[in-house]
Length: 564
Image (cartoon, rainbow, N blue to C red; front, side, top):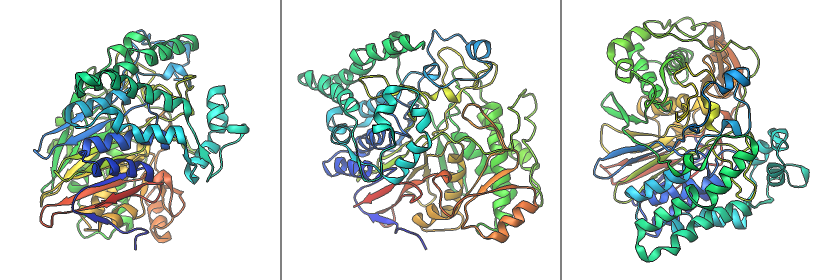
């Protein structure tokens, strides 16, 4: 029995990582905006409402499917500064990527939202950003996860006075129910809106360009670049002024007549497809949901897919990633042959033929979890669908004084060694964990879905997909069902530790199942019955047969859906 009902509507729906973000998106839909307008409104609001997890100047990978069937992804991921020495971290930092400005890549989210609005939206930036400005200026109530997150990272926030002033008022984390105000951030976003209004007579396109230029070429950019220079960083005005989010094709594969669509190997999205194809190859028909046999097999499939992610994925502009070969039936069969039904792989499988790889040393303690990322999806009354996974936390890099933003610290997901597929290089993008996705069910319609959770994202998305498609669960039940997560591969976050055979298991999974998994060689880490570490999947599914749409949101975090 689910904590919440699946919500149904016939007109439009939005599901987002915070209830006020869902409300912001819904207000845009009710005002006549489309899914892109609403998704950008909710996405920008998440950068205000979840300031520990999402930054307005962070990353924002987006997937859009129009009612016409046209599909595109907006990468929303910045590149390393072009002046950054490729060997900097190996030569001067002992093969580590330190916290602070040296991990800064070009902030991509503002451009990604504006690019989506330019290409497929209908409304002005000022209208779409109005809720974000209001939530920042007027404040919102601190909620339990925000309080816990700030408290857990208090010592990190204290390293920079401007971070401490915002996140530790009076020297302590703000308490649940108190007001959280971000006046500097409100002024930054409002300045972009004001620059748009100043050229309103020239039309919507000119206004959106003016809002972008305010961030990437104007006073905001000059302040960011000056701050970077003062702090010893490399991000320059030229990096900012020349930045544009790439429009890239999705990677698509069929599974039992359904089509699953993910972003390219600049993120971890294709690992979801590989895991799904491996699951089909090894076979789960006849297995009970969340039985030991079932959880063992999907865990082994995930371990292989995430290992291949480590061996192969990187920015396709710099690395030849053989996605078609990796997802080909013969490769899937070879990788699936490694799986044993009665025993867990003790460590990462060897790379595919011809792939040279070195991985970080194994660890036996507790994985480092970086708090970041949220998610939003929207479907409008015309059938357009929007899926986005904005991200970048605020505790590992300094706020730019006066702006209230942390320029993207996503460099933490590059490897310090330039020879790695996701290794550091000037102008290269890190390999991103956030990966929005969509499903085209065999019976028609569309289902945008996604989650925060770092390396747990693909794992949570796979389990929810199988709950929905294979076990036939109601959408909200599929989201709320207990989950597991493997840590047997290198983390995507510096210092990239791995924990061979480690399997975290939510407490609602039966003790006898956990014991059986341990007997097969899984190193069981007990999670609570419900934990934010297991992700927060949101989804909307349209049904052409009924003309209705179903929306679900994960109670593991403060995510909510609205449908009408």
